Image (tube, rainbow, N blue to C red):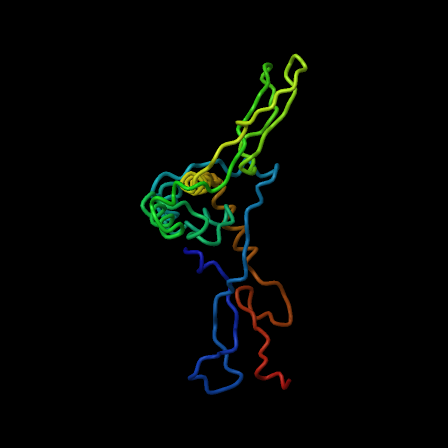
Length: 219
């Protein structure tokens, strides 16, 4: 029950060298047919947050949650993940290799990537400066204290190294939405319904449709 088995098909003009007829077509998967789970206010009960541990792949997670590794596409679709390479967290070894390739050396990992604000609150615990905002190296922050005096903070920001930046970005990918098991059957049924073709001039079956062939159009 892999993802590609769920996709409908297209009859597409054959561009293979061995094709002997201009109207010859081959059956291919419609990779442009996609669906995603809308996690708006009415759908929060369908899923729950999950933190991907070190080294866990989508198929391993599907086996753990749904007892079927081939349902990894449900996890990916639920999170609108189209590229595991770019959108799934790397393990520590792969992350280290990625950073070394990107920045050129181990020493360069500790160069400054950018500067970020530090969170500042007043004496009443009220937030006066949000942390994590990207600023320039010479950023200063001025605010009024509880007594009305003006405070100028020259240490309101700090450096973020390449290593910290890449590690944080990778860890952010670890938090995903997991479709609750009790909704799995309904999700798969709805997904298959979305994948069905509607009646049109190119309709053959609800899982197969024809495509325009410029080689026989006469243009």
